Picture 1: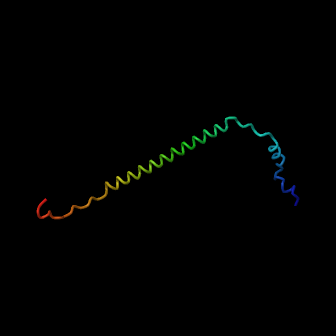
Picture 2: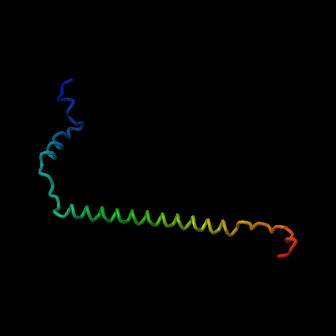
Picture 3: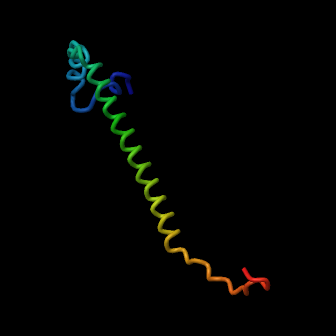
Length: 88
C-alpha cells in the first residue's frame, strides 16, 4: 500500500480541500473581539442573575418550610402540676 493512496480522500474531494486550504483567509470584522467580549459579559451577567435568583428562591423555600413547621408543631400539653403549698 503506497502512502499516496492513504492520503487521498474518498470521492475525489482532495482537490477541493487543497483549494480551500490554499485560498486566502476570510476577512475578520475589526470589532469581532469587542462583540465577543460584550456577548460573554452578557452571558456571565445572565448566569450570575440566574444563580442569584435560584439561591434566593431556595432561601425563601427554606424560610417558608421553617415557618410552616413551627406553625404546625403541636404545642406541649399543659403540665398537671399542683400549685406549691404556700400558693403562688
